[in-house]
Image 1 (cartoon, rainbow, N blue to C red):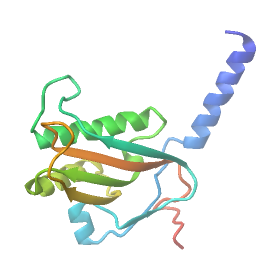
Image 2 (cartoon, rainbow, N blue to C red; image 1 turned 135 degrees about the vertical axis):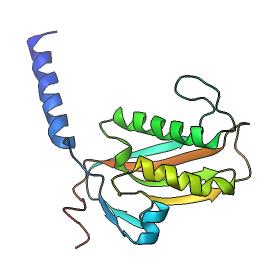
Image 3 (cartoon, rainbow, N blue to C red; image 1 turned 90 degrees about the horizontal axis):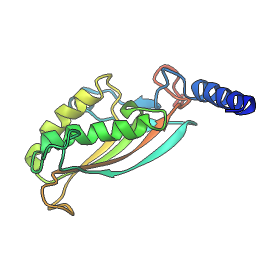
Image 4 (cartoon, rainbow, N blue to C red; image 1 turned 180 degrees about the vertical axis):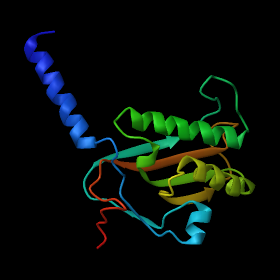
Length: 165
């Protein structure tokens, strides 16, 4: 690698670190009522700035090791969250940067279990704004859940520096 290329790579890396920052929050999460905490959602998230990442709907019938998890809603939920996190880490963020999600489930009886898993995934208490929708079926047999969403990486707003005021 030429000296000019090395310098450009170092400058780019430095800019990336200062832009994203190690402890960036996705935004300012409104609402923290008991009901909202119990159901693991925020009624709204305020953002200003940051890198917006639109996440396609994610489904799976295999876990990350390739094991078949067809028909297993809990295993699919955990794997889908892991896949979304992996996608976001690839662009400098994490699952914690999600500001909204739309969740489609096949069985209404899985709704409460999904909420419990979402609480685990967003244990810091900043839950994405969310919709949880029951559908009659998915495009492939064995799929139980699909999650799509939007993440904001390195936003100006946070609970500590609110933009709502």
